[in-house]
Length: 472
Image (tube, rainbow, N blue to C red; front, side, top):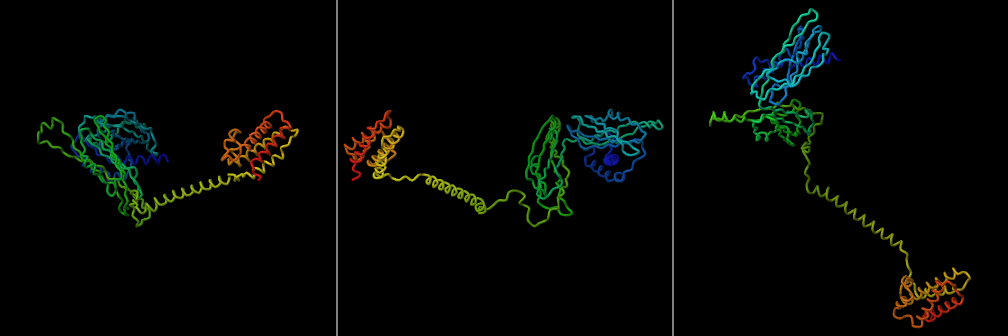
């Protein structure tokens, strides 16, 4: 498994190595189109399709992550070193190579690994950058040598890498997506990153009108940051499509063109005078193919509903919105009224039914109590009978004069006779009633109870009944 993984890794890196365009000289006047055409022609060569290891004791393959560079951007150069068994390679010498005019920001040298039964390999990664004062143009990462010793015959040798052409540009445009396999209606986040020097001016009118047919732009956000002599603008697009691509055609996010121009410095503008004009240039991204998941069943129902909320008519909102809501409120009010009514009925049932006490009924109760008003040797029983007689007398006189029983029981003796409505009690009856209350109070609250007091109290109560005339 380890050998298989190493073989696949080397084949991938080897295929990248044949895409390089060697350029002799530090700076040339070739344009970017010629570089891309050369790289494409060499990538289709038979050497890339049919890989065969040579008999060289040491081979060096190089490739980079991007053929364009801008100040402030790091370029990664990966070096693949492959050597036969019995060969000792001076890998430490890779840390001392000169790649000027590029500056080595960092280097990572991996450990020796087994490629197959005949070869070993190692991978070295350089982080490179260009000085900020370098002018726009094509620069070459120079070739370098790596020495080795054949331990079998003690022969020494060296292998060289191929140079790589890199173009320094004042602006870099890059487009990335978060996913390339979607279903109908899925959202895609497309990030457009533009890095450019501070003297570069973008034509924002064209950027604001960018479209991505057949994708629709649902949302757009942008931000700009400036650090040193470099400005970075990031525009995030949220895209979606609602059409199937068909069997032979899948949609793709088209290339994005960014128009820009470079402001001339004061010296060049003064030398050219009025004939000086701004030259608009173009930088663009590469199209990105998107694969639509066609496992979904094709139907004739339009998918426009996925674009957002469906607007409803006023009738639909009334019958399915306001009417159920209003009905719920009415049911809640009805339930509350029924609950309150049931509670009031229960409270009414709990109230005792009071019967109006007439003077005749009160007189009968008074006479019954008078029969019990007899002296005994039990003082507690005597006091209890006196209290019953006092209560019955108040009830009778209250019913006779027209006041309620509760009021008659709560009034004092002096206040009781002030409520003599319409003077129903005669003067004699009032005097006898006052005497009856006095005698009853002496029986209830007195310390010593005498038999004669009981007799006087009973006679006084009989006089009250006689003078009120209720028995006539």
